[in-house]
Image (cartoon, rainbow, N blue to C red; front, side, top):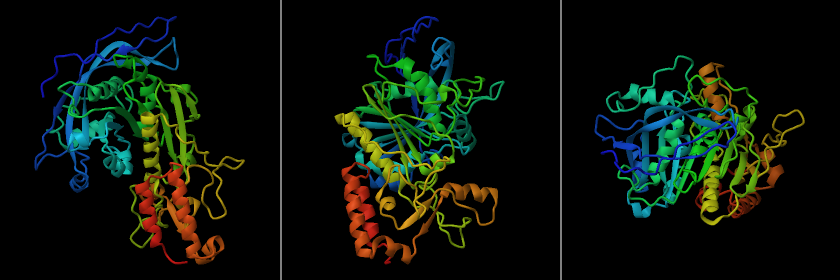
Length: 476
């Protein structure tokens, strides 16, 4: 595609004086977007399963998007904000788009997931959790590669296909995982997806809502984005580029604002999610909360500063991706955690939609309970207390653990089993003590499903899946 010659928005210069507040800059020009062809010899890295997309009448396309970004540094005038410097840098990033084949079937919602390269190459954990939900809704999902490890891995995997991505040599110091140009690039990609530009991969779609999301290191990227480009890179009416944010498994420090930026102290406020004029939802699994300090976020319904923190009881770190049975072929000593974490996340996505569409307040949930010494407090059977509680945990047949152990004690298997978590099925004595008989359990469980749907912690399609599973649950 040829680069658009029409600017998306008018450029306004940012002024920063020691005694004046930060002044926002309107996003200047539409980034260029070049579609990458798919051939028998060259396909997108991290491509979705074709059958999965076809079932929902979805299609997938891949682009290299390019533009020019300002670099940022922490402000001396407003210490918790980052400001654009005079330096500018070209950027070229990978964009993976999954959308309904027919624009008329689109919901108008676009989820931009910053891809997480913590494992050395791109992954899309939020798509892995909620793909079925997005496609049921008609949402467009966009995966954006911003982390240096992800960009480097793409070039190693297919140097010819990804030759257009920015060369990102390591800085003279220890370069951060996310290049400095990424903050403006994230904003510019969002503005492109909302534009009428010929460069827009979604030009045929009516985009009503644009949400930014990330899990793990990608969530840490979004914290730094909120401190920097969210404040300064705005649409023409001074509205933020993204209408809402979902940050999952945010248990680490915010990404450095620039190459060679000083390392911030662990208690520095810049690691925290800042106040912003868009709803921000923080989603933590039980494993995230148990693993150590996590970003704090107080619930709020204040106008222009809606905040929610959800802690999902029973959820392991890698439960969505780990299919490790506790049998002779598994490296783990226990069965993997099968708690339906994705269903809880789907309901949270739906609540965000209802907030943006109808102004309906986000539900609130108590945090996971801790004992006086600090660790999470379990009930007598080993399940955590408090938090977002789906029926498999409120009317349980199992105890869900969030840290599995390797059979042989090896480090590699240990990491894998820790991600998979563990679970233990109650024996017949426990079940009879809890419920009396199977019919009584099933009646209570079905009532809990209906209540969870009413309270917006579970979606109807997911409740139907759990109901069908309950019908074949083992007899006491």
